[in-house]
Image 1 (cartoon, rainbow, N blue to C red):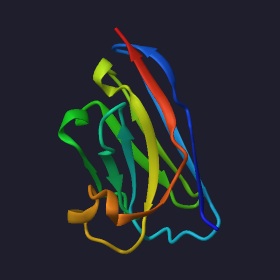
Image 2: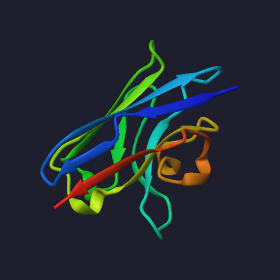
Image 3: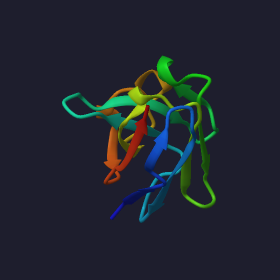
Image 4: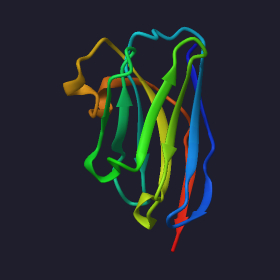
Length: 126
């Protein structure tokens, strides 16, 4: 059974930083992409960033230059360094692992991911 566990959320003032981590256990094909999504109250879950086995990365436009995704395949971990946080970054953040060897064109598609963590709350105050 695959399990993904996120840690590192919390409350931070606008302009501050947080580092989210995702630990994977159980069978997981490390050659598949992994990603971060977020969901704010009353909104749909949205793509934040994704990273391939070979550390190719992609980001949604609103976080480019502020967030950095990384992964350690040997340790089955993934991280999201979030700098210059804004109030609009407030959401529950989820890590996810792709259900197949999809190309980068699918990495922002929530349906491309078959394994999800429980989420961690990130709250940015003004």
